[in-house]
Length: 312
Image 1 (cartoon, rainbow, N blue to C red):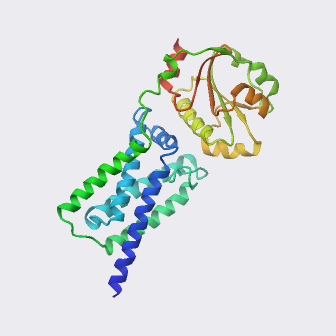
Image 2: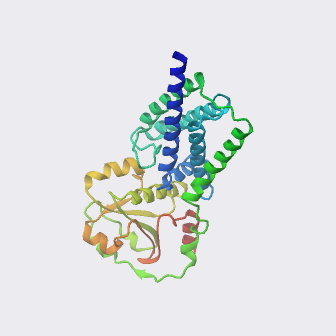
Image 3: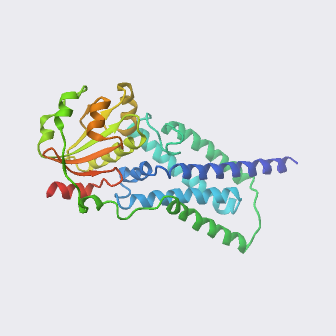
C-alpha cells in the first residue's frame, strides 16, 4: 500500500514538473530576444547563431516536459536528461551570480515571473530532489516500439514548436541599410536645451552616433538596451548614446536589468522626448552630423551593419 502511494505521488510530481518545463519554455518565447542575447553574452554563439540555440533550448524544455507528463522512459532516459539539464542551468546561474551579482532577473520564466539567480538555484535544487524521488519510485508504461515512436514524435514536436510559435527572420539584419529612406534633420537643440539629467556633449551634433530613445518603464526598451550593451562590449568604438524618459527612481531597476551603466545618457521630460522620438518606442536613430540616416527597431539593430555604416 505504501509503495502504491509513493508511485501515485511520483506520478503527480512527474506531471507537475513536466508542466513546469513546458511553461518555462513557453514564457521564454515572447519576447525571446533576452534569451537569445544570453548565448551571445556567454560567447556560445554569435548574433546569427544565437536565435537557433535559444529555440533549441526551448524545444528541449518542451520535449522534457512531454516525456515527464506521459512518464516515458523515466528511469532509463528522461529523469537523467532532466537532471542533466537542471545541473547545466544551475551552473549558468552560478556563473551569473559570480559575474553580475544576484540583483537581476535570471530569465528562467522569461519576463512572466521575475526570479533572482539565487532563487532560481533553490528552485532547481528542489526540482533535482524531485528527480531523485521520481527515479526511485518510477511509474512507467510498457509500450514497446510504440513508446519509441511516441518519444521521437515528442522530440520532433518539441524542437519544431519554438520555430512555429516564433520563427527566425533571416532577412531582418541588413534590411535597413539597403532600403531607401527619407533622411531628416534631428533638432539636437531640443536635446541640449531640455536635458535635466547630465548634459549631452555637443559632439553628438558631429560625426556618426547611434541614439537610443528609451522609456524606463518600457519592456521592449529594456530588451533594446540589453542588445546595445552586448554590441557595445564587442565593439566599444561604436558611439551609443541613451536618451531616457521616466521617473528617476526607476533608473535603479533599469540598470539592474540592463547592465548599461557604461553607456552615456541624458534624460528628457515627456514633451521634448516625444517630439524627438515619437510614441513608438524604443526609437533608434543612426545619426550622421545631426541627420538621421536610418531609423531602426531593436530587432533590426545589427552590429555588422552598424560597422558597415560607420565605414561608409
